[in-house]
Length: 258
Image 1 (spheres, rainbow, N blue to C red):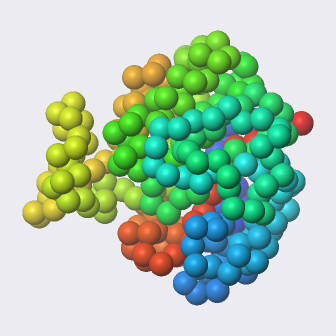
Image 2: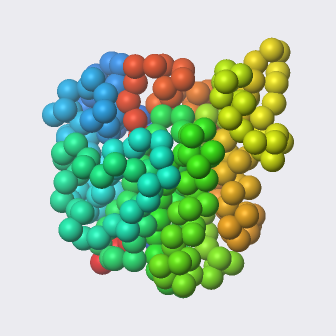
């Protein structure tokens, strides 16, 4: 993990990536309990005006114009979109794009996903100067949304898989992520190394599955960066739906400067 201490505890970043990238924390905003303080999601019961202020604060702190951010209405699918400039300019409104992944080669666009235990993944091609981002919980893992994001980038831009770099967000760890037997039964036997039982509880290793899916699409282990922090265990830094229920969302994103 690489921490940008100039802004911590407001956001973390991967210094190894040559374009701006970030993971916000729950700090530095204006929302009040239980969303304190930098909730960025309209899909909560937080005051919408506070969410708008938080999004403006984040954009100013990052030095990225707020009208360059593209948010999704995340619905736990494998829907992935080619983001264009005309999708920008709506960051202070409810998102109108239903899906869980975005990619682009257009400069001046910031792609983000909202999180509170699920895994955020971004992909960067330093040769083609292409970025992509997606959101994956257990449904996204079953649909291989992260692998499909890589496929979209390779097919649309002719990217060399060996050059791709991936970043993985803070998320709930395998020891804290418990699920019911009904969910476990949805996973095929090929995922058995990432599904295990401990003290009569079933667990899923979301990051393990996603790392494997990225590997299977040609991204090397040394090119997969991981902010290895559990959201469930660190609610003083991040929002966690599992730990808090009524809570906010942080964002994980990447930006192609103009």
